Length: 568
Ligand SMILES: Nc1ncnc2c1ncn2[C@@H]1O[C@H](COP(=O)(O)OP(=O)(O)OP(=O)(O)O)[C@@H](O)[C@H]1O
Ligand SMILES: [Mg+2]
Image 1: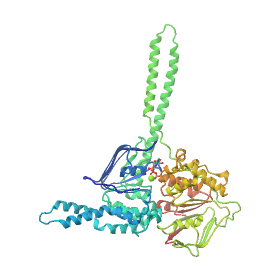
Image 2: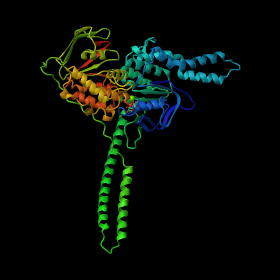
Image 3: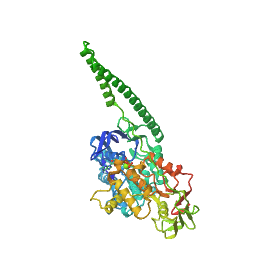
Image 4: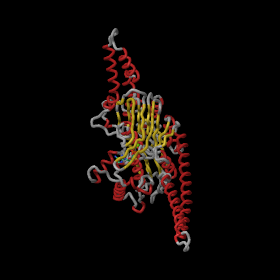
């Protein structure tokens, strides 16, 4: 969802939240969020998938109302959400017009005021004010800025083009280009680099660094955090239950400070546990003493001794109660990915034959590799890179068989099992809706992760693509908690749905994994874990990625670099 809210009040540009909380029905998401982003500040928001980053952004820009606390905005606000539901019939021009409408209003006002201005008796203050606003927004340059941004972000520039015919990535780039050209005072972006290639990210980085207002950016792109942000808000669990704000620029300083904080938290937890143990032992001893004192010898000062003993026990009891009330909780261990063992070979395979092979593949207008034999050997690796629209997804689709070839041939090893994470996978909103129809669920209710996973297993079993003995239980993978797996898929965050896609790709214990932009929407820590697992697995792996860190981490893999559908 995108916001076009105009919240123009006088005073310095800023966005602030004080003790903000938000809950979906029966599900608290945010609490105790306090922040302030002013002119020249660029706040990065990070956290595990499902920690509430998108929710926070939507609360900050006014799309959601906080259940507690206050949000203040001064200046105009423009946001680009993680997902967009395309309004029926909308075109590229619709988005451009929406973004530029305020600028056009200011331009028209300037025309009117200056046209009507009487040099002898005119209101100079009014003219200067409108002129200043028009200058601040550089209204005369607005259409040109849109053109430049569309072109630099490799977004379709034809204003008549229907948004429904664009890929998710193209749509995101159109939205981003419009919002950047709009020059709002507060810019709020949710995972902006997911759909950008290097040139696009360079453009975005420069725009953000030069932004004449405040920026809040949710991102898992470590390089972007390093290059752009002046502070980081981390929504992961913290010792005081409030999101931690790290005031240093860059990813590395944030990571260092966070690791230190976690270490202190664990140390405090250990010390408290120790103190509680000692006290509990003392209390036990006191109770023992008490039972002795209950049967004092006759004639002794029974009452006094019993009272003293009881006081003693009560004091120890109270101490323990106080300790427990003030106790820090154990830092929840980060969920760790458990990557299943995958096979390199199937029965009867020739180790010298590719698991999948493409010969001279061509897909009209998208891919043309004449004379190329693209062979993925057992346990082989391939990294597919290239700018937006260069044909990365088409090559991957040709390898998995999802995209039909117009020329050339595809062969596979017998009964090969291929695990696929598509760029917009099963968890994408449209896909969840389709699943709901297929599964015949009650209207309006998407299947839970557990149910959808079971459906997928049954489908693969029916097709003979799954060995029932080796199904990987989804909860075992450490991608989603059992609680989240019990929830309807459409209630999960985008990254949680992407985790579900990854689980489905592993379900059939594949011989080959084909992953299209696997870093998109996944949290920083999970990307690290997945990268490590992909380097180690016995299965063959094909990855298409624009992610700068992942490309560097896989730099020793054979690379297919594409440009305009051709290998370069
Ligand atoms: N409509 C909804 N109903 C119930 N719960 C929801 C709904 N939308 C989101 N949630 C839950 O709220 C929590 C926060 O979601 P949010 O989308 O803000 O996370 P996020 O940090 O942006 O995650 P990601 O990294 O995956 O984008 C998640 O647990 C999610 O499952
Ligand atoms: Mg999100």
